[in-house]
Structures are given as C-alpha cells and as structure tokens.
Image 1 (cartoon, rainbow, N blue to C red):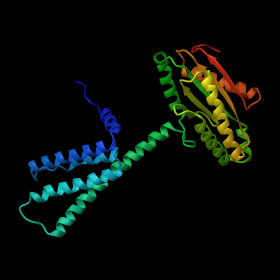
Image 2: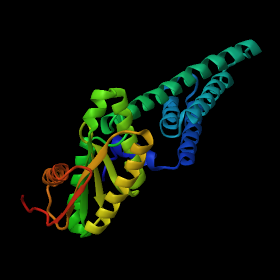
Image 3: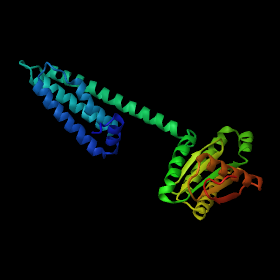
Image 4: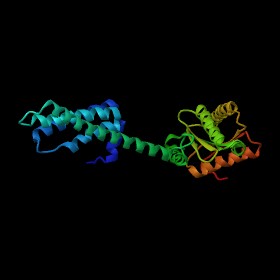
Length: 291
C-alpha cells in the first residue's frame, strides 16, 4: 500500500476547493472536541487543535484560519469549563476565553505569514523580479518538458528569441531607471501579443524568449508579428527609441535539445541584427539538425 508523503498531502489539499478545506477543518475540530471531552481535563489536546487551524490558514486563507482558531479556542475552553466541579465568575470566563482565543489567533496568523513568505520565496526563485515574467530556470524546465512530450503529442514547438535594438543607448543617455521602464513596457507588449498557452521568459538584460507550444512555422510567424506590433505600440507610446530583432525557430520533429534549440533561436536573432535590426529571421528545421 502506498503511503502518502507530506508533499502528496499538501498537493491534495491545494487542489481542493476552499470550501472543502474549511469543511475538513470544521470536521477535524469536531472530532478533536469529542476526543478531548472523553479523555477528560487531565489530558491536554492543545497541540492537536493546531492541526485544523494550520489546515485552514494554509489552504483556505487567513480569514478562515482566524475563524477556525476562534472556534477551537471556544471548544478548548468549553471542554475545560464543563469538566470543572466549581463554577467560574463571568470575568474569569471572559478572560480565559479571550486569552485562549488570542493565543490560537496568533498561531493562525503565524501560519498565514509563513505561507506568504514561502510563496513569495517560490515566486522570486521562478520569476524575474523586474518584469514579473519567468526566469531562465523556469524556461528550461518547461521547455524540457515540452520537448519530451513531442513524441507523444506529435505537435511542433517554436521558440522566439527577442532582443531590444538600441537599448544600451537608453541606459547610457536617459538612465537605468528609464531602461527598467522600457523593459517593463516590452513585457506588457509581449504579454498582449502572445497566446494563453505561451511562456514568456527573460533570459538576459534586454533579451526575452517566448516558447510557443503546438505552433508550426505559420502560427509562430503570426504570433511573432503580433508581438512586434504590440511591443512597438508600447515603445511608441513611451517614446522609447528602440526596436526589436527576433529569431524564430520551429522544431518539427523530436528529439530536440533545449540548449540547441535556444542557441539556434539566438543565432537567428543575431542574423536579424546584422541584417539591419528591427527584423524577424525565421527558420523551420527538423529537431536534432546541427548548424
């Protein structure tokens, strides 16, 4: 029998709708309250109440985490007060409920803050901090996956290597802040021109790659033309004196190596630059061909 690992459990709850996670946390709280009641006051169940709180905070959001924390605080206290032989004053009841509730709410907030910090770190590891698009590492991971899927799908794969013409002049004459704004403008244009399935990545200072899955030479040329139009709209609007050189390669049959495919697209981009800049050089080739 296969044993579920922590990662498998996390993926399971991440795929669940939020309401399902909340219901699971509520049911778990109810089960814990029953077990806590039957075991008596001498056995502390505090640490177990952290499980539904953490579940709700991590997978359903901070608000639900706080809600479950307050509920657990009330349940935890009710188990304690109902098991007492003597009655407590209203002030003591309010104090005990308040302190236990605040304690569990703080724990809930810590879970939420930790989740946010880990999500932020994961995003930073996989995205370009300036433009928000994927970084080189993500590009190679996804490109490798797409290439390995080609024998099964039988679909072509295209890659567009985009370089900004005259970008160095912007940095040298206007400043690096202006250069950063140019790059953000370019990304806005690229994102407008690509299809929903395409991946945009920044691989260098002013170099971007767009992976075009299931795109033959004709479809790739259409997307590249749309990218050029939308990016140039952004550059004209910002009055930036830049243009685009694009190398576009279509891989028509497996196997194909990610490094080789990216290198070929890069070479085509340099051919576009040598040919006068502001151009697109395209090539369709069978995977594994050299040169």
